[in-house]
Image (tube, rainbow, N blue to C red; front, top):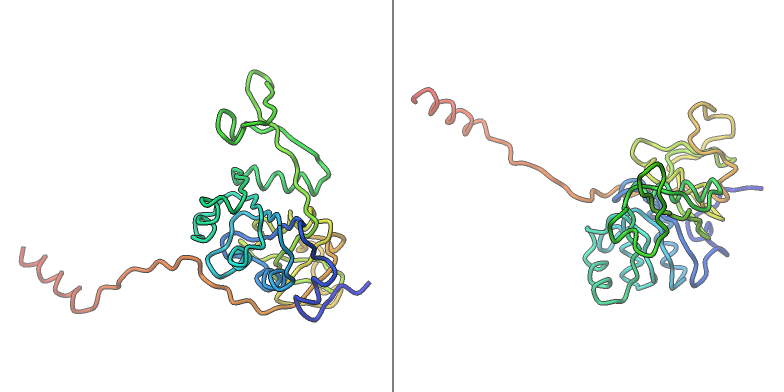
Length: 247
């Protein structure tokens, strides 16, 4: 079966529907499937449950789906960079299921591994544990968390071969590899597609058995927060040295 599609819209064709659950990879704006997110927006699917570490920023990434109000619920860890998310949540327009970041990662990994639930000490005695089973193991309380599986996983990788074997680059490995295993259907956007056999088997992060569709895209690679400092001019440095010598 040929897995390569010409564009993001065709890669999602026939996969989207109202009320579906979607896993979206990446961390902040690093390693997000930005073209697939835009194609999901354009599909018009509504009442989505989106599982993602964060919700992008206003107007980009998952922020696009928030602006169109296609997301009904977020299962996330960090959402502090999106004012529209904050507005919808405080107005009661958006459901939110908060997870400690490590717990979210493990819930996704567990779902992909076929593990329905597990116990963790993280969150015991906090709002995170409300309504969940708490059990004592060796004198310490642990809260039960369920594994996560989604109707669709959209992820970003660096390279893929024609069979869908994937290589991720640096921090783009955040959430993407585990989500590839936890989607009932997994669609990947990549920067480069190489012939089968071109990837060193020891360098493959995700086997192609988990990948259903691939699309090559060119990413914008925006910076979520740009932090800079003013550089001292040559004149000001000389003046500072002169003042120090005079003192």
